[in-house]
Length: 90
Image (cartoon, rainbow, N blue to C red; front, side, top):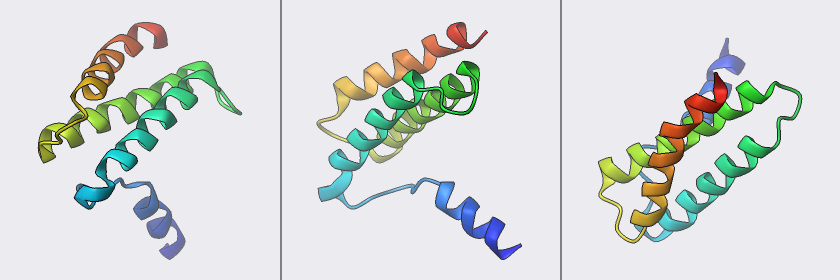
């Protein structure tokens, strides 16, 4: 349906944001990942950690594909978190 397609489009993160907004955008995604991992909401802890892992993986992918400068420390932390979270999910 059109509504389902629109919802899917909203969930699909951009492949590139304007350079002057990049750091703010990535910081927001980073904070979102941390918040999601700590608040389980209506779902289970495993669901929350899986969502956080997806956020961390997205940030790592975005930084590597777009050669983001000035976010290296955060990207490294995201990489480490993405690697560690599966052990907490199991």
